[in-house]
Amino acid sequence: MHDHRRAKAVAISKAQSTPNWAGWALGAGLIALLAAAPMARAEEVIKAHGISTFAELKYPADFPHLDYVNPDAPKGGEISIWAFGSYDNMHAYTIKGSAERLSSVFFESLLAGTADEIGSGYCLLCETLEYPKDRSWVIFNLRPEAKFSDGSPLTAEDVVFSYETFRDKGLPSYRAQLTQKVETAEALGPHQVKFTFKTDAPKRDLPQDVGSIPIFSKAHYIANDRDFEETSLEPLLGSGPYVVKELDVGKTSVYGYNEDYWGADLPINIGRNNFATLRLEYYADYNSAFEGFKGGTYTFRNEASSKTWATSYDFPAVENGQVKKVELPDGNKATNQAFILNTRNPHLQDRRVRQALGLMFNFEWSNEKLFYGLYARVNSFWENTDMAAEGLPSPEELAILEPLADILPPGVLDQPPLDAPTSGARQLDRKNLRAAAALLDEAGWIVGDDGMRRNDIGETLRVEFLNDSQTFDRVINPYVENLRRLGVDAVHERVDNAQATNRERPPEYDFDLVTGFLSTGYIPGSELRQYFGSQTADTSTFNKMGLRSEAVDKLIDVVLAAESEAEMKTAVRALDRVLRAESFWIPQWYKNAHTVAYYDIFEHPDPLPPYSLGNLDFWWYNAEKAEKLKAEGAF
Image 1 (cartoon, rainbow, N blue to C red):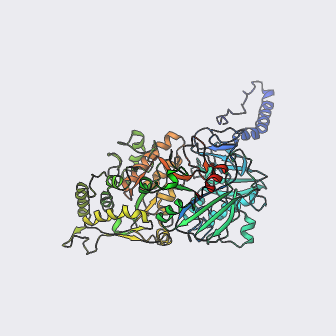
Image 2: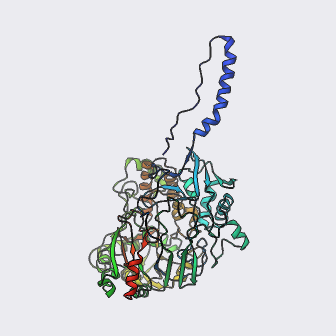
Image 3: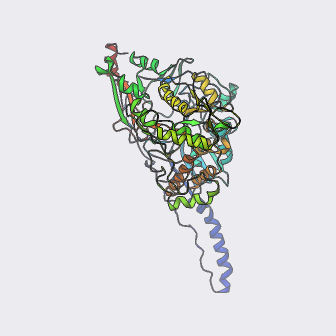
């Protein structure tokens, strides 16, 4: 990486003491300064093959391939996986309909990340990028050979059009972030595009933010009279390595490798995109999907059910070695899977009520009785990283938090962060039951003669679990029983996938509790505002809980403005404390291994990179093994 702390190129000479020379010296000095000024400005601009938020880039400009891939991996064959529910749409960037799970596979961005680094982006559609030290703007120099999958050239005009479309018609929360960050996007030439950022926007992540925008064809969009906000079974035209091969809408989708893919020989792509075909089979429930795998309908399964993993992989194909059942290391942070409480609903706006509900979920019992001890509890929004808040706030954290004292939730400044409650071996933990009852009494929800809790105007404390997953029945039903023992009118409402999707999204937000993911990054960026910002509370598909917190908004600004990794981690820990204190989630569980099963026709790098399983990316097909299993009738 270049040294950004370059010395100034121009020095001012001391004026001569002889009057006859003074005017000449001033004139010569001014001429020299003016002549050198363009050089000085040029030297302050960094031109590179990639960019990193804080650290140096791992890979130099002339890297031959990523360290974790097999550069000699054979090309060909098919990998097939399953997906839950159905789909009616091949456009991934609208809130309408249910998009096919891989419908973003067509698109590439200016920059691409790797699976063995945090915070780095390498040129993909661009050859180089240029930016000043303060990152107030960035220029991407596009690869002239970049083409869309129909062979038409990808130009700066397409980049600007894609940006403007996402800005004007993208998901509302994402649209708001782009508007707040970017001043202008302009094509400087056929293969050069410049983004200029707003003066008051934190600049640290902005080159990578705009560098990650999916790029699609302007000409194709206009010729087909597309509307970005509407659903369509015709995908937008992208430049990626896969194209649609076959669709059986709602049931199956097949993607084929584009043999004319423009970027096949780029170092960042060597050893990747190895399969000729990617296929998805859709199932309405987990049990049917598992039976489909046993029967060879699809060939790779990332097992999400601990019960299935522990008890059901005893069918003949596993026992005779045709199917491999393995645990592979997973270095990723926890997914932040949780029951999310909808704080827009009046009865869930009191933090005490939300905490009481959280006390009644017995993770320890669930893990032993239902999950076969496979999981650990999530506590932090940055679980399984060194950014999770622990103990009392450090002096550095207090320096951030104390100015916000008047708007912080109770306990943030003088207590350890709020962990998920622990429970005993019995399904109903009586200690937690008493604590939850006290909180509800304090909040004005009093037990009546029928055992149900009501407020002062006679309304019952009713909460509904919105659930579209059959495998979650065994988790939710005991939780509902515990809540009813507390006097809460808890109801488990089973719906189909399409209904759940519609009810979870804006503007409906028609639920009390729903299982979801509150994602955060290793280097948190604008996604913090999409998930946790007040301005997205009524528009975001991610801020399901409707969080509105002035303290959280201000802490997000501090995180985004951090200029060093140490500053960022301190700010993240402070934010973690406040998010946990808001009690809008009931955290669930995670594991540090991929539990996967697959027919023994695939191979993968060993070791895998820490941040990706990569089964659709850098695994490959063993044709010899596949022929053997086909001959045996395995699938």
